[in-house]
Length: 435
Image (cartoon, rainbow, N blue to C red; front, top):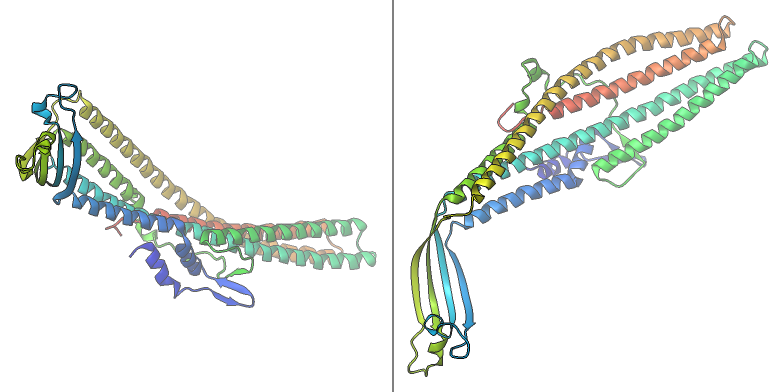
């Protein structure tokens, strides 16, 4: 089942819901919409269909080829101008049905059929890769939308905290227990928090628009997401990683291997140019000369007839052109192998890098959550001490900023974990026949 059909099947199960003027979408719904609207997937599907048609076209060359031939040639007759009348007969007129059947084509058709089969298999795999790439793009855009939405909520909470604290400072200032400096600093940080909130809203809007662009839907600022940004419990590829990750088993490497095999077949096709080609031919129809047509009808020779024959065609001398083309194909194959090796190294390196980054992000999240509890307790303590006159306003504002920074760091780390997880899942996509 191709990607477009798969997404269409899922559409009925994952349709978006609307309510209160908003379109509520889950990640699965976004993936369905992206697959249904993706030009890349449609192009990949077209490429697979075109390769199948090319294979069918190649198969037709093994069948007898029948064609009609109608032409006339005028040649002047000597003595004024003209070729040797014994050869030209004053020209030629013919109307034939010609049949040609290949008997031996030096194995070229079989090699091209193998090449066509590889192309069909490769394009099918590239179609799957396009689906996986689209899935990764949607996931990353979706997670960024969740992160930016959560940041808006976080910044709004920070503004609410500072406004509540600002109200406390004003009351203390009016009662003579706080200085003008405390009031100005509190107003400044509250204003800064409002600017950060406005900026977070802009980023959130941009993230939603970016997600809608990936999904291929019209821009709609009322779109809402159904999920929350939390840490995934595990990875489908964890068990495979414990047994050792093999880069050559990935779908990307499978496609690269197909390109190498195709290039090697291209070498064989070029080498087979030295082999003979044998074909049967036959035609039937009307064939006569210009001299015969100039005779009176009673003396003309009947031009109706047929002929059959066997043709053998093989090269004798082409000044080494075949050898030169073969060398070019061998160099091209070596280049494809080199690119395949670079891809293998890149996949192996990315697999290790992403594992390290994911492990680091999870450890960082654990530490941040511990710090977050401490930062929250510290803010409450500094605020209480300030109300009792035992601390400075600057200490309260610093504690509040530390709390906000800790929350932002936790949020960004959660988004990083989601992104690393999605990239690892994409990296570990397997080729056909592997698990």
